[in-house]
Image 1 (cartoon, rainbow, N blue to C red):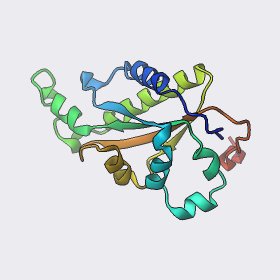
Image 2 (cartoon, rainbow, N blue to C red):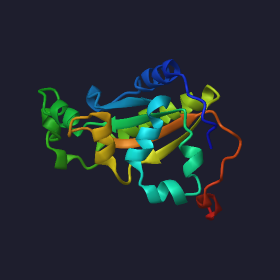
Image 3 (cartoon, helix red, strand yellow):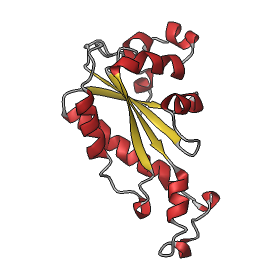
Length: 173
């Protein structure tokens, strides 16, 4: 649950820069972040959600007070292109369907986890919001090419102390 204070863009940019130092398969560098500043968070939520969610989800209001959003993305084309180059050609991974584990998702996960840790270390709060729906709408909102896939949205801000624990925490371990 966020208090609505804008998260300084220079801090978000610094965290993103550091997080992207995580290695990528074949040095493909097919992952990245797009920063949505506080001034566009409302527009992001209008794109990423529908009216029913915004009015009925228990955490809706507290999440919409995020001080910034970072969109974590990956580009599979960067990986298939890289693995089609001479030094990687014998891998057989120059085709999208040849990857038994799509490392573009793995690398995006690693960079996103690093981002979350940097945010936490800096005393801010964050939550990862999976790309379960409206991913193309969000990609269009961000102005991305069609080859770029949304991995997740990271909501960042100053905690207000009113966080509602997820019901998932009640599941037996």
